[in-house]
Length: 134
Image (tube, rainbow, N blue to C red; front, side):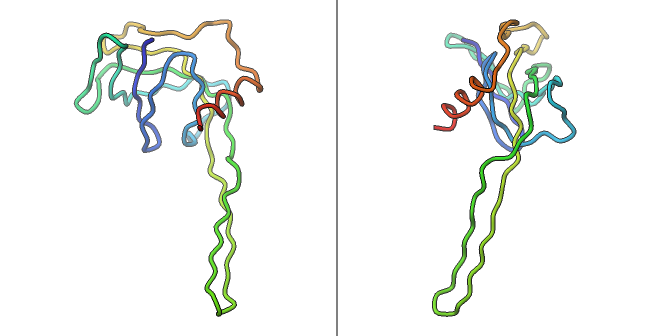
């Protein structure tokens, strides 16, 4: 199985074709739009790997944006004992849910491609994201 290591949102992800991924929110992007990731650190399979220094020029990963959303609320509670001082705060991190469609090598040829007929449903997206978080 061919994979690529991409960098987005200050993080690195190991991606495969037809994989659904939860990443930091992409600005100015609408659902069902195509996205290109040009910051490719490495790509390959179990036999051969191509590593960049630090990036591979010409290599790219093409993905489709499924949706933008917010994670569950994280509560931040600070309390100073015996001073009747407390502060409660909440935070919901924004994310983008993407599906990897193609992985291109540095010469522009397609290494790996997702199947055309696999349309992600709400149930399969939720299942894959929950398995990914564990």
